[in-house]
Amino acid sequence: MKADRLLMMTTAEFEIWDVHTHLSGVPGDTPEARLGRLLEYADRLDIARLCVFMGMSWSHDPSPEVMRRENDEVLRAVRHFSDRAFGFVYLNPRHTQASLDELNRCVRDGPMVGVKLWVAQHCNEPALDPIIARAAELKAPVLQHAWLKITGNLPGESTPKDVAELAARHPQATIICAHTGGNWERGIRAIRPYPHVYAELCGSDPTAGFTEMAVRELGAERVLYGSDAGGRSFASQLAKVLGANISTTAKRLILAGNAKRILQPILREKGIHL
Amino acid sequence: MTGGQPIASLGRRDFLQMAAIATGVGALGITRGGQAAGASTRLIDVNAYLSGCPLRHLPDEDTSDLVSRLRRHGVAQAWVGSLDGLLHRDVATVNARLADECRRHGDGLLVPFGSINPKLPDWEDDLRRCVEEHQMPGIRLHPNYHGYTLDDPDFAKLLRMAAERGLIVQLALIMEDERTMHPLLRVEPTNVKGLLALLKETPGLRIVLLNSQRVLGGRALADLLGAGEVYVEIAMLEGVGGVANLLAQAPRDRVLFGSYAPVFYFESALLKLQESPLSDEQLRAIRCENARRLLAKER
Image 1 (cartoon, rainbow over the protein chains, first blue to last red):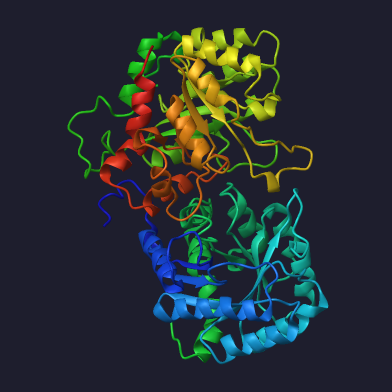
Image 2: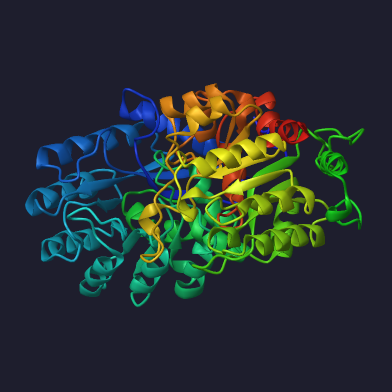
């Protein structure tokens, strides 16, 4: 139904993968109902694939049981839409062994293809080391939430500088700096020295210049489109790429090319060929 | 401008007629499916700015770049304030430059909305100049940057005077996510407490809330919309399907298209219209018709 899209954007000319979505912001009593609703909106913007993580309700510091429940919800959702969505396993480094067990359950033995770390613990803590090392062995990228709030971070909330410290210890890992720290002018600088760290654009206002700076300072090969839907709009975050004064080649990398390159090794191991 | 005639030389009625032509209201024989956009498919962006930002270079801070982008996306008219109006104290020159910039760029695309700071001495003369010298159809207010709350008597007086002169009042509630502000430029959002009473006390007031959708919703929004001629726009609206969700709370005729360009990527607002499943009537209302009707209400 595109008759009402007169004078609108031409999203269809791009392949789009969204590396950051949640089962939130849309109605639905089950995980698959919510993911189905998200995909309906994604379809309107020609977004082909979603990476999804965390459950129907969230915990800053989940117990092993809660962690498992949230991951089960994501597993259930992506099972219904295996051609459209990939799951990332949500882990809590404050429970290292439980996290390693969950990583093996959901990624080594299950269909998930990445790791999500949120705000339970600063990511420069040594407790993360075995998790990151294991994720690298499994070829699973690690998406680490990072914000730098002038209003004050949560007690365990990582900054881009924390991500940089983690990255320095794990050159073999693929690390995604989620939100590029929100304060992206600082975030881009913080991760700049580490070529295995990617700037992810989601979860902040669509302030003009963000993507241009990321491409200029990191190269388009290190920038990823994500939305943080359903709390954020797919649209506002997509505009950061489609509205940026960067080349079409760079847009293609950011919208899907980089995500495919990062995920291809683990997808291949799972028998998924793009 | 539709030709080379400066805005300053036009009467107010002439200006409004010119604006109607620029938005395609007077266009004939243009169909929705054609290359040329008719009135129903054109856009009126009620939340754009000119000039630069003190915090960063904006890709479209040059007016000609902004005009090019707006034109590329089918914008027929953009209501623009000046970012200088936030911190400059010489508001008269801010507004004069704004009017001049609108006259020199875009052939009538840009419609200036002057800044008024009611905490400055003799602000009433700034208001007079907006109307009499610059023929502006409205003003844009930034209470949190000018250090007053909405229960300030000067604000009430400003609303009264604006209503008497038939001006549209644009009230910007925030300009940036509080979390990412520069540490030396932290500004609390404008609290709408007090506005409800003023709407009831000020006959003829037409008010557009800019950048309101991060901080205003639910009952508070419904109360304001029900109390007077209040409009909202979508620049800071977030969440999947945000426009459709907003239309569940706000009457269709009170929702306007706003981009907050060039501070935000213009495409954000445009893509939000694509993200939400909207009827043709809803799209037409938001894209153009509501703003056109609002601007046409000369008093």
